[in-house]
Length: 424
Image (cartoon, rainbow, N blue to C red; front, side, top):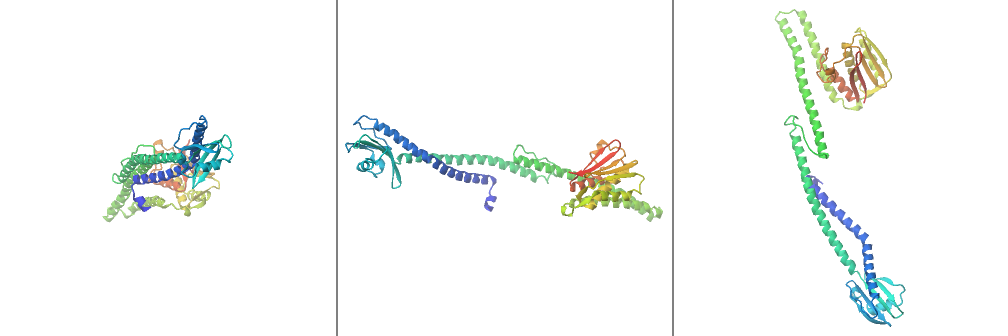
């Protein structure tokens, strides 16, 4: 098996085709030989019958013409009148023995086996002492069988040669396409996944190329997002760090009052918040093991989060929650619900409504509608709305929902905005 795997694909295909063709041909030859064996025997009997009719229709005392596969003996008054081609019987029978065998045998045809060979007889009795016997052996069968075997052998060789030539040409084209695809895949990392993979056709190799091209686009998109995130992180971290540094230097130089250190504390808190969100986003990559999931009653989580917020805001938060559950992790769902509620509190004017009906969870706020341009990019990292902050909150929510087979969507209603979470 290891040697077979080391062979080129074209060699493997040709070898398999040859083996299958040879085995199939032998099975076919055996099956056909058995099927037509009876047919050839019947053909032999038919040609004997035709010759028999020719012999008995000859005028009296006329000598029928000889035949390569058949012979005859004619008796008159119990004596041999004439005979022809007794050699067809391979010296197994003499004219006297034939007379003794068929003088008293009823009917007009017979078969006899001698030394494994079968002989066929037809006879006509005109009287007790006058009758004609026509006979044949296996010569006719041997000739037809030899012709048949030669024809099958030639056909078998032709099938193998033509098949291997066809397979060789086809496999060469197929292998060349596979090599081309291999070369293009090997170049992906060298060109940073920028060059598309193109493969013409409608077969499985084309499907594979399309799948790889889809993977390339996803990797390219992911790489672009990462590059964009790095740039945004650098920009977002640069400002608070610069502020902290400038105030620290001012305090050290005696230019600024120590009480202005509160500005530094606020900037440090902002940095801390950004780091936490980045860590939260990174943790999602490891949220793969369903064994850590559990059935969670959503009503309890939502109510707990709302209770923490209701005395910290003037916005009226209303809930209408049934007993639906999600299969997830409590910690991550708390992060999801907190982020959505924080976003709603940022935009709401007077009220927020949270409803849960048959696993469909809706967060409604009566704030301004989201612009059509931004609503399509809402869950993309570092996309910020008019009052957006770090730009990772909604991305964390969307990725977390995906891990738990939940869909997150947003739509404008009149008036306000709804965020909807529901199972796939």
